[in-house]
Image (cartoon, rainbow, N blue to C red; front, side, top):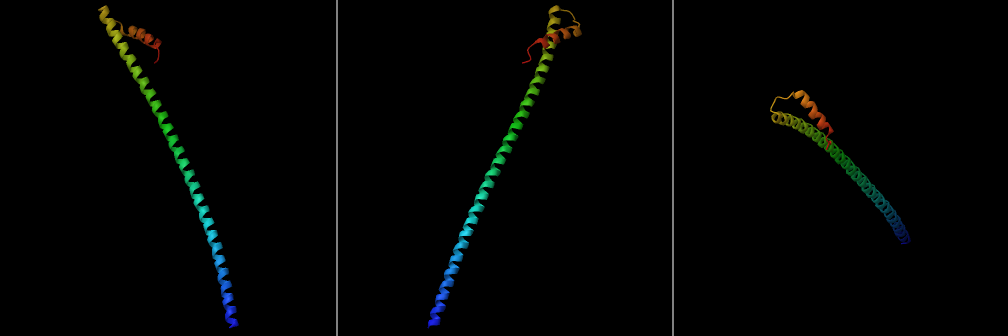
Amino acid sequence: MRSSIERAEQAKQEAERILEENRKQLARAEEESHRILNEGRALGEKLKSEIVEKANQQSRKMIDQAKLEIERDKDAALSQLRGEVANLAIQAAGKILDETLDETKHRKIVDSYLRDLPKN
């Protein structure tokens, strides 16, 4: 009987040792899972910041390109308008004077006038 009690006591101690070992393993697993989750969150935040910054850079680049294109279009339109105004001025002057004007001379006069106008 004594040996049965001793074996039961040994089994109980072994079970307690295994239980304590399992608790330690569980605690280590929980710590590891928290570490992995924190790393995942940090990585997610980093990726989010990188994506937002890249999108901001692209939008700034698109805006700058659009501004340049608008400025080129504006300059082209002003140039075309100046040419049309010069032609109209020559035609009007010709009608007023009721004679054929030397278009080259008048073009120079009108172009000179238009160059002196404000650019905007």
